[in-house]
Length: 522
Image (cartoon, rainbow, N blue to C red; front, side, top):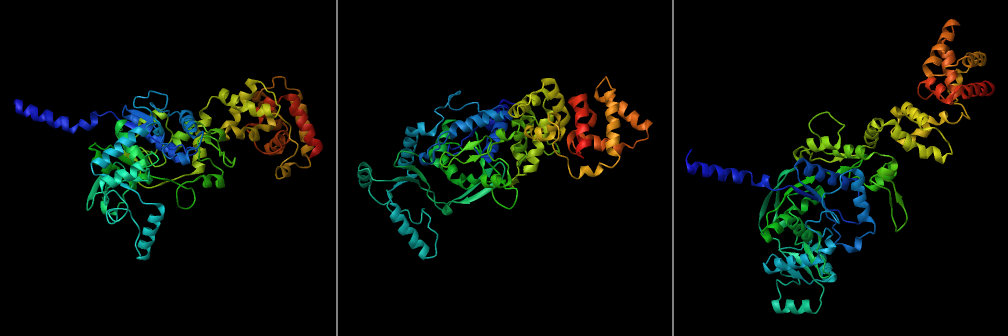
């Protein structure tokens, strides 16, 4: 092969794989305006999975430029939620601040200089319009049956630096007049853009408005701040909710105006409400009794409390697993994934375009799957505080055994008491439907059963069952005549795990006591 051909091949390969050589850096950039919504959690998760799949960096930036909406405690809440879920960022406030600060409110000076750069390059302009003047302009448009859009068709008719002299502009700025800096959207362009999830998308610049980039209070809007920060923080991919898709042309134009390469974009589908149409909201959770926030949150303005997944008893792994499959799958029927498996399987190209319906029952099913995977000893420890509140003391071994018998039917540890109360306290009432199985001959049979139980020394489940069934066989007593009344006497209903496991765990004395009570009561 000639030197020329080798050189051409090297150039080709260099060009082809340049983008692949760039380190993957993705961000989750929430605003601290309240608790982290489960939709935001999924966005964070998909960014995390993409980063780890590609040996990249997942970082968190707090976008607090809107100080009017800032809520104390929200930032800490976000960081705690991600930590609980096991998807903490590699870089954030106080952690590996390679491109810090990671709070936008601490980067104000940066934005001012970049806003000025856009002014100087002719890609932005000062607008001095008062709210009153804009209202008048808006009404005039509406009277003509038009929709008011602040862009190329009227920006030179309004109070802007495009129509007044540079000297007049400087004078008004020095006088402290209220202003905003708007982006000067190009005219008569068709933008052909690519989204990893949605494919090729097209936008007409004439339909775009001149968005505000910077305000006279010294704070940028989201549009300017996130572009500048994503560039300076070397963000390679912007993975965010589909509500930001309409902003994509502006953001690409801003990158172009600065002379920067834009990152790749991927806009995730919405998480839809379980019933009806529309985006999942807090109201849906309140109405149907499921959480939409990762942790409990108390609104300081009215002290209203919203439930969180953690306090509701969900396992973080279950929440992650459930959310990962809202809008994505790996093309198989597989449903249960560890975080490591999700990382290995994740592919942005397999994220769906359509919204994903939130299913509260499926959510609970996932938690059940992770509950039964837990060690019985760990579940017993989680159950112990519930018993302590009821002033019930039980050995760790016994509690572990009880948990092993009931967990297969539970979704949450909080359900354990209802499923196992009879292990600790005798029934005070008997299920009305079940009492129909208590016949005229039942008291005598139960008394005979007491006599059988009294003679058993090895009071273990298997041995008790063997002896009781031998007694029934020998005396030709049908199973239904004994077993159902026996369970009813011990439990108060026809529920619970294997009957003879219950008998062993509550002990001979308690078993006989409950049978005697049932004989008297029923």
